[in-house]
Every structure is written in structure tokens, then in C-alpha cells.
Length: 336
Image 1: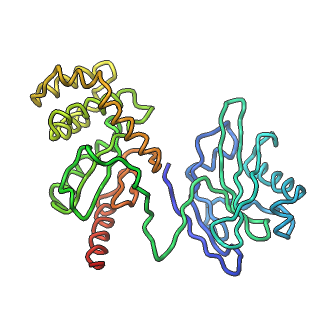
Image 2: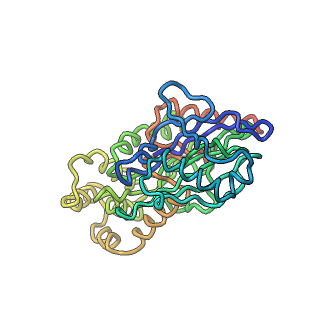
Image 3: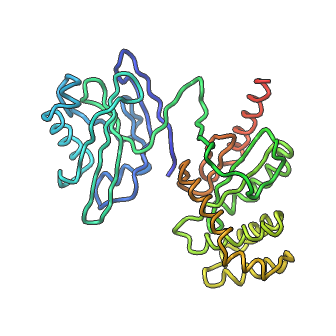
């Protein structure tokens, strides 16, 4: 579920050492390409217990034949069929070769279809110059020592007119994508409030964005209600968010409205205006835009935090937050 990184060293066009994490979606059916999910694959050097993701003996020794020749492709496909345990070769296709991330590395997309279950998995295959060894990965990130932080592009992300905490000109910006039905988000809520209001008070600007997951039946309606509360009173959003998390275990789709009305009454909100907002389009559109922004990054799980553009996925320990925030503060101070 996490986007992980791999480190590659290339010497004289040869893949010297690589390590990566693979995250392939759940089973198309009970065969081994499903087992690629969340397990460590090491190519070149493996720790005990790690699985080797070489497309071994896949082609002839010349790069041209290995990457483009029909005989080389047939051999590569046969090797991948065995490596991924795809019973029917018609379910496996290999895309045309394209330049990889480094000199001497070729990239090809491997597609596995399961017509029976109407599912599809795509993984990337990175081949060395000879074409007989490579790496299988669904997600990967390039690493550069001169730019060590993984960064996401926030240019198209909508950040105005959202729930916020802390001064807008603070040196640290945290964008939180969260879901009111997510138990890890509930645990993160108080920790992040402490960061903003106490530990790094005045130095962190928190922006909340909704990312209600499809598997949570009441999360989206709760997000709309909290947004409607914010439109009446920005501070009411945070109180209602805390209420949802506090009562999370007892809330169901059937009693959600009862909880919302109770929270609104305690906050002194206008009940009719809140109801009109919930039934209207403005809050719904803002939540929908947050979801689109999350998918564009992409955010795949909650909570996800973007700290000065650096993605921190899941519920990290407080030392992870401290490490990223203090490092960013130090780098900004040094750049002055």
C-alpha cells in the first residue's frame, strides 16, 4: 500500500545493485503474481528470506534481440509466465521496450489479465543491457543523493478555503488527507494537533483535505457535514472532526445523522442552514475535489501527510514527524 523507493547503481551500463518494494493489488486468483504484494524483492543482492525478482534466462545476450526480437520476446514471456505463475500465456502481454531510468536499462510494461474476474495488473520490468536479468516492480521511485527527499508536485492541488490550523506563512506546511471512519486517522488526529498547537506552535500550517475511502460507508457524508460546519464557523470543523473520531466505534450509516445533529446543536450551529448545505452542492463539490486531488498525487491510503511536499504515509511515530519537520526547518535556516 505504500509507495517505496529503490536504489540503483549503474556502472558501465550494467545493473550493479538494486532493491525495491513491490505492491501489486490483491489476487486476480490464487496464483503467485498476487504474492508480489507487500514483499521485498531484491535484485543483485538479497537478504535471507527475500524473494528474487529476476526475469532470469529471458533472452539472448544481445540487447537488440533481447528487447525487440520475436524469439527473445517469446523466451522472455515464457520466463515471466513461470515467474508469475500465469497459467494461460494469453493472459500475459509485454509492452514495447522504452528507455529506462538509467543508461543501459530498458523498461517494459507487463500486463496480466484475468478475464474470468475482469481484473488487470500492470507491473514494470526493468532489464539490464543483456536483457537476461531485471527487476519487476509495480511502484518505484528514483533516488538521487543530491535531492534525497521524495517530493510530490502540489501545483495543481486545491489548498484554498480548506480547514486549517497554524499561521499561513509558517515555514512548515502539512497537508493531511484523512477519512473520518479511518481508525488510524483517529489516532493521528490528537498527535497532529499537538504538533501544530504545542510542539511546533507558530511554525506549522496544517491544511486538511478529505479523502473518504469507498470501503467506509459513512465517511463521505461525515466529510460533507464537517465541511458544512466549517462554512458556518471554521473552528466548528475541528470540534466536529474530533467528535467523529471520539465516537467512531459507535457511528453507523443509519445513526450518522443523529450524531451530526447532536454535534451541530452542541456547537450552536444553525441546524436549517447545515441541513440545506448537506443537501446542496457546495460541500459535496469540495469533498469531491479533495478526492480528485488525492488521486492525482496519488494518495492511496489514509492518513497521508504531505510535509513541505514530502509524503509521509500511514500513522508514523512522533519521531518520524519530528525528523522530517526539524530537517526541513534546518534546511530552510541553512538556505538563508
